[in-house]
Image (cartoon, rainbow, N blue to C red; front, side, top):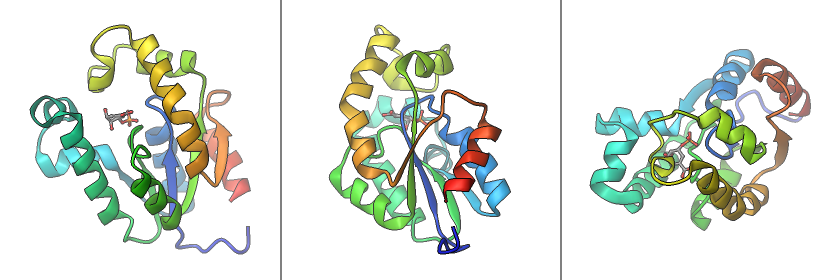
Length: 172
Ligand code: S3P
């Protein structure tokens, strides 16, 4: 809309496999914003992959790094931020994200999330046990938190990324 500043941040939240990274890159390109992916940023800073951080520091250690990186990068303007699926778990993070830009929840059914994360070795939470059941459990816990944090909620399972981004741009 006209009131949306050119420098405003757009923040993508949602489950693993909801399309945050793909959509984020494309959106940043089309909207002339800088793309930042929180997981990628954490890997850059530590020099190791996400699974290694989980292994050495546990999920709690990863969450601390994640919160720290988010707090820092949202100081910038004119960014599209792709967060990790668990970014909204802490109340402080939910407040931070909501205050730092327009928050979009990329919503998708668990079957689609499962399809898109199938064979993925880079997501430690899905490496043990039944990945479908795990995704279902996480979705049940988190869907209300994503909804509470988001300004805009959009189904990202029905169209390809390009069409989704066109639709999103019309809503901003
Ligand atoms: C996580 C999602 C991952 C990554 C980490 C934990 C989660 O990010 O941050 O594996 O708790 O849902 P993506 O949502 O980009 O896969």
